[in-house]
Length: 476
Image (cartoon, rainbow, N blue to C red; front, top):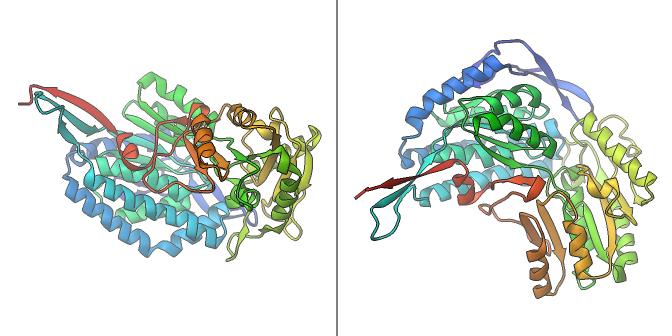
């Protein structure tokens, strides 16, 4: 059993004030392999005090010095690549090759891009050439950063790096069920030489440390990535102190496949949703297929799903791993059964465990057809390898179905008609649109409409989330 019960506070690893052990489970075998501690309000107060004290000097640090520290962090991050990859693979179930090529690499991409953005960002500027008004961007202050288990390092770097870059101090709470990559990142921060108190880490659950951070009067901002349910609670908890709240929440993405789409569009859509075992908030979990190719699409989708292998995470290869936990597994299986009970047609997968994988939280790649948008599987975020296929007659109907959701994170469109693709993209009510399989580049803004959250992460937009804007009149 790995002992990881300490917290990183004020530049050192310290014991929790109150003992509250929590086992970390390997989702591939359901076995405990590490022990952390869940923090208390006293631990949070200690970390916030350290961050508040460090803010006085860190907020005034020269940009060149911050760039040097971040470049040092990047170098160390790359030197510990395999360790980061293996840690995430074991804690959240991403197969080794996927963990390296998608998970670990996303962290490197974000660090590199934020360094570039910081080099070019202007923190002070005249309002215009004839005005005596001056505009200054200043760090918002002490930040509480709450990150999820499905893309651990991706979300940590999307929050921690811009906060550091603009001069904020922070307390990171990684997911308690996948915390070890966050603790490894704290080691990298320490080795890079950041001053004491600038970055702090406390493990804990949402009801405990999450609530303590969002209600704390000395925290100026909360940045949270996770479920819409938890995002609502955080917003309510933060209301009394009027702190800034940045939320990246759930999604129920639609993928419109027109009859003139690329020949592999259906298969690509299946592989997209199944990657990361379906545990991505912007996954296209509703596939809308034009009626004229609907029967063909069903055959292709089922065939592709049946080709996808499921296996343990700590293996190389092109397979998917388990879902993260018993709670998530039970939720996914319940929703698969609801699809069957509500009359959808199951053409691949199902609620049974894959052959030979009775131990571990493994779910078969599952495809439903004849789905209507009022079914639970079409409305609720499943967060597993489950795809619903819905037929449509024309463009307006397809867009209407896609937008008929409380979410608005990422939507997709497949067509070789460029003007139609642009037209549909403009009609989508979502923070991101992916045309013909194109993906977002590092530095583009990521976030959602409606109950998928508010605020944006990435690029200059990601820096601005952690800044206050000050107007100084009579500067000259």
